[in-house]
Amino acid sequence: MDSAHTDRMEAARRALPGEDILREVSGTFRLLSHPARLRILLLLQTRELCVCDLSALLGLPMPETVRHLRRLRSAGAVTYRTEGKIAYYRLACPSWPRLVAKAIAEGEERGAHPGLRRAAGRRP
Image 1 (tube, rainbow, N blue to C red):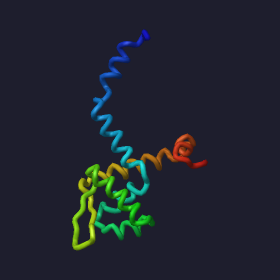
Image 2: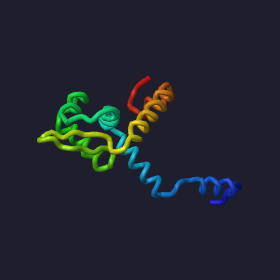
Image 3: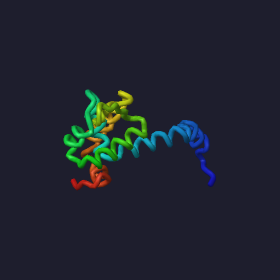
Image 4: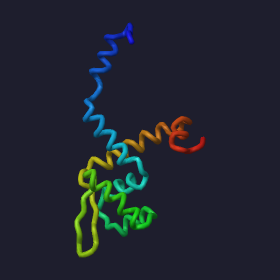
């Protein structure tokens, strides 16, 4: 397909990040696509918490909490230490809550837009 704007198209193409970066960012969005994982990252921003405390704070069954923690751990977002039989989780990198907070602020700013509510499954 020929275009009268080949110079603009080429400039736009050069401005795109590399495929590896886009895959990495896409993976981050997938990781953050569940509200429970967002809450976990926010809860861990000030202190480490054991699985039972996280489960209670999230209002989720322990196995579901563990499943989310496992996913966050495999992505390198959280780490843990054990004390006896208790696992205490903490952030592996302090930038995760900042990323979540920025996304929340963006969502709140755009939250009045009906298209976003529909995309999130909410009605106006």
